[in-house]
Image (cartoon, rainbow, N blue to C red; front, side):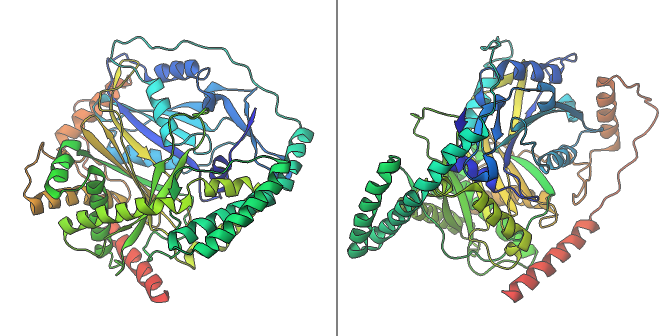
Length: 565
């Protein structure tokens, strides 16, 4: 049994009926043989790893009246079949069919009475492939911990013997209410001192940055006195690690900076890492600068099409890991963020790369202003019932519709393994991150590199960004535009988009009727359904006008908000 940290708790507290705190990863694998059973393989692998991975077997126990941070305990009623699930796509198993299933799964809250993870084996993908969607609450792991777990699940080759064996473990009795209340009362006595010290530490940091020595000195003295008082009750250590910028001004409004609904949309595309390295060399930026510029150009084009491009730059929050590698407990959150301007007001792609580079450098320099763990510590010093009530009130009043958010979008660039990875003989073809959104920030862009590819995953509110597939296509269009402007040579041809069957808000990309018939036949034969080869597959009607109507609605909404502002 151990108590959650303040930062861990913050991901639990952020949840409302429309906002969820879980993060997700979509792994797409080939099928090593016709008789390969993905569900059986996945279930067996998880049954082994439960004994090795603490996040898989622990659940949350709340303190009475939410007076203090909750506790992790090993689930004494663990049910593997609750967590590992099996679904299938209807033929032909197109990309938008898979994305729709993913959106529906991640658009549901998790059961807090059980360990906070779910795994979905999804069969029926085109060309015989299958997918594994892992859904894990952010309270239990961060991105770096997720990478550790991913590597522990993987094999080095198709024929490699898995390196872990089943390990026994025992569930725990939840702590007694009186025990939790005793600790809660102690923390309630100490927390005011801690909170005051944190506030003065922040004041001192800002004063030092501004060169106001008199304020800095006074804050230092006051902090010292409070430290002595707090130490008598409970010793604390001053934090001397990475620091983060806090945005004080609001970002310009966009169509997705509003209160979110419970419903999600997901879209994905693939790009070549070798091509992006060519752009890096041609522009003089880093690989991350190029990625940020690609996202910036795509967002600019999208907002122009919707007549909603602000005059000032958009603002992005970029998560960063603050792990040192020396953590005693890897299964907790060690993550912070920087805030950077996106030059969406710049029309020149090359200039956008330079401006992105400058913005990221400024954000990194400002990283030293405020302790990176300040927000997590603030959660330590506040009773969860207070924080939860405040967050729910913000959601209930829909304040995101009445005031501008401090940021417009979350953008993450996660480096992944360069070598091929395998799972029970199946080769990993792609890993697409599926992140989270919140009130006021209804769009998240996450890219993940693997071998020589870059997978782009977009998650958004279903109503705020109805044409999300178009937005992800604009990222690929921006890569092509940058090659045209720089005159750089492509390392490899751009991968064409995966087949889309024509879901809501998607312009269908259809193969020939003969090719589609063969794909459907192959899918049905795989699952043992007899196929009548004489029947033809009817062509699916195009739905180009429907997204256009929604674009108009989005334009009107954006115009109204701009006028109101």
